[in-house]
Image (cartoon, rainbow, N blue to C red):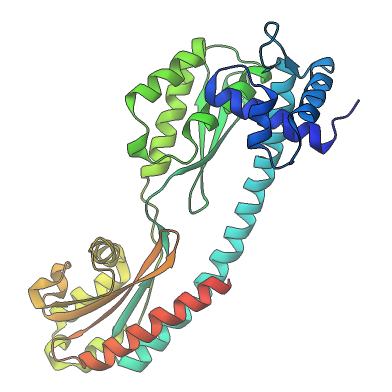
Length: 341
C-alpha cells in the first residue's frame, strides 16, 4: 500500500519532531506542527495506519510513536531525492547566471573606462557569511565516499573521503540524516566542540569518517572563492604624464595583468564597515604600486551576502565628481541587472 500525501506529511512531522526531542511523538503534538488542519482523532487514525504499515512504532502502551527503520528509510530516500534534484538545479542555475554575469561585467567595465578615461576593474559577486545549506554523502566504491556540501549562496563543494571501515547504504542514509539535522543553517562559529563530539558519538565506528566530513564542511564554509576580476582601460594610464613614466606605467599595467593585487584591493574594500564608496589617495591605496594614483572603489550588494567591488584607478587629479557619479549609477544598475538574471 502506497502512502498518500497526508500520511507522508504526518510521517515526516513525526520523524522531524522525534529527531528534535528524542521523545515518542503523540497526535496532539503533530496537530500543532503540521499544516493539514486535522483533528487529533484523525491524526491518531492515520498514525495507526502508519504503525500497521511498519513506518512507526509504539515503544510501550499509552506512549507516542517513534520512527521505525522502514520509516527512516522512506524519509531519507525522499529527502536525498529532493536534495539530488536541488543540487542539479543549483548547478544548472549557477552556470547560467555565471555566464550571464560574466558578459554583463565585461561590458560594464568597458563602458566605465570609456566614460571616465581611467583604468577600471570589477569583481564578480562572491558570497560572504557562509552557512551550511545541506550535506549529501554517497558511496563511490567500497573504499571511498563522496561528500557534497552546499552552503548558502549555492556554493557547491565536493570532497572524496577514504573509508577505514566498510559502510552499507543504510548507514550512509542515517549519517546523512544525522549531519543534516545537526548542521543545516549553521555558520562555522555555531558548530562548536560539544556539537562535534555529539555527532561523532552518534556516528559510532564511523566517527573518523564523520570527522573528515566535518573538516570538509569547515573548509567549505571558510573557503575563499577565486574571485573573477574584469578590467578595462589600462592604456588610459598613458594619457596622464605623471603616470606615463615607464617604470610607473609598467607597474600599473602589471597589476592589471596579474589581477591578484586587484583582488587584494577588492577584499580590502569589501571588508570596510562602510560598503559605499571608498576613496584612496596616494599612499592610502591598499596596493603599493598605486601609490602615485587615486583609487575609488564601490561595493555593490546584491543581497543575501552576495557582494562585489568596482574600482577606478587614475591620477590624483582625477575628476572625482564624475567618478563618484558613475559609480553610484553603476551600483544601482548592477543591482537591477543581477536581480533579473
